[in-house]
Image (cartoon, rainbow, N blue to C red):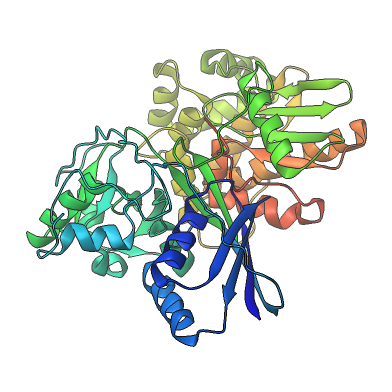
Length: 470
């Protein structure tokens, strides 16, 4: 008899089954690993209890967690075990637990060896991945925090168990968490920060040196970020070039190409609709069917001066803006004098936030702890997004004395509602009910959660293995 485990794995990366295979060989148990179509099939001979116990002990100690790990089905079967050679290619992943032992144990031959490379996932060769990051105890704008002392994580941050699993996974992505420590809040001037744990040999040695010196964290500007967001049970990669699925060249347009790759990943063959909600480029809605793939709705370039001039020329909106000028003269003056503001920087200026941009708006929205936002006018017309109505709606709530956190929260919820509304209209027009979500704005949990709750019956697809944006 044999123990059979079918492990659902939401990626085609081979390092995780490679780790299992390496531990099989080390335990000397009669077993096999097969990986096909996002499923890892593990067979173990249960006739030798000593070897089985040894394998279980080794996996408990050394098998890393992975952000792509899904459900596991276990059964006892009567199947022959055919031992097959399993090889994995090299990946830019973190040192495994075995590597960390070899690196940090003074009795090890590779103690503090900065050339140490992981060879514990059945990889025949190792690639050297250049890391140009430099680390400092001093915070600078847009720095990522490297946690050098994991024992302090609950003292420094408000973080869930699921977020810890992702943070300490073998992929070691960067995630945004709430700062708990008052001193860290003072140093950074933030309530939220992107954090990362040891992700390669270089960072491991830097972290060890800092920890021995009583330094619990360092800061660095990440030259090759890998950012994840955790919302409910969903883990989505927002930006990555290390472990996400490489894109095939399916279309010359970058957005359509990412969409088509995601549709292929989802197994959609009869057509699909994409909401590409990006703060870096325009918000777009894309349709793919038997006639091809095309962007059918797109946000036009925001020109602040033109939008304000239009508002001033409109009978109703001009009164609103005049009232805003009278009540908030300094804010309205900033709004007029600051040139080349994008839509998110303009909104942040109206809300009187210290920092400008989508991240600032997103962070402010996350500060609101209640439920149910206000209805902000975010909708498309023939030209694109109706910016005058959007800003007019925000200004009207600002005049009514709405708290900035609540207003930012309402704006992010309304972006989600606008997305759902457009998807439903496109569904009716094109008779397609496969929906794909892309874009970096989904790093905001308010918007992400709103989509999951209000669009749940339509089963929107967030790829687990493809990054949602460039």
